[in-house]
Image 1 (tube, rainbow, N blue to C red):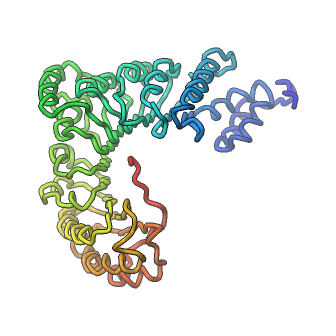
Image 2 (cartoon, rainbow, N blue to C red):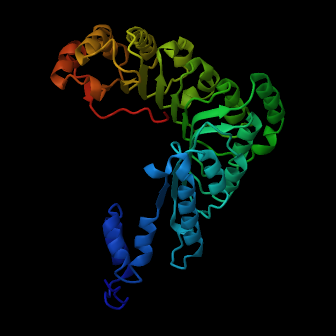
Length: 419
């Protein structure tokens, strides 16, 4: 198809932009728009390349084909740098996602990749590597400095040589005043605890010089941070001169195999401002003290995702937790819970026994909630697809809570985001 001249469609630029904006979520149509004329190309290109995702295909994931993926990326970067088409990709790309979690030697590839990235206008950056090899913070630190407009940063499955390397990376973000959302999932430290303590003492002495214009976060997501997360929260979040300012934090999402008690210092420091709390824990961690819950005086929305290993004790502990915690949250309006089954079913081969056990303990507790939480509007049960007996059966199991008009059932897959 021949590209039409710019004179062939005598339309005002405002109308052209509106037409293209209306199909911004339809890549095939956007590609067609980019071929209409020169005045259609810039707007279409802006939408087409606003978000870039880099991940290996199935053939490139094994050790013999890593070089194929590396070569493909180098070709992409070379084309990006040499292209004369405007606007340049480095100007229009706002969201960059790199997922190398299933790539052999992913850390080596990621370290080399970040050193050559030309992007300078990113607002969202998501990196997922592999915890098998140490990650070099210098390439990422340089990339962060080149993108001062970052609003959201997500780092998952990365190992650092030591705690100083880890913390030094975040000092590169201390001047990112636009940053509002930070997500850390499965961060590993190749460091003994006593060495971590010594390193923290040294680092904390330098904190006052970093705090002039700190990023003020609104959302914080923490997965498993191996290596004493209770110590890391101080320089990152709770120290008077911490790297990040949490005074405006409204959403806290903790997904960890560790106890919520390990984040008690964080909860005490910021709980009073939190309006949305999301928690993901296993049975051994469903025992935070009542003092933890009293920190969340303004909490409006609470969501639990429970890691279920087919042990009925999970249900008992969760029921006890709910009966203790919810009455301490006077402004709670929305409560949701679900279960993530990470072992092959054995105790519950069919959905009915699971829901019978769960509802026997939970239905009376849920039915009493309106009297204890006068602001409560709804309770949502996220139903695992492998344990879905049908809505009519669920209504029967939770008949007391459902009769109050309190209960909703959600059949969407509730994933474990940082797993």
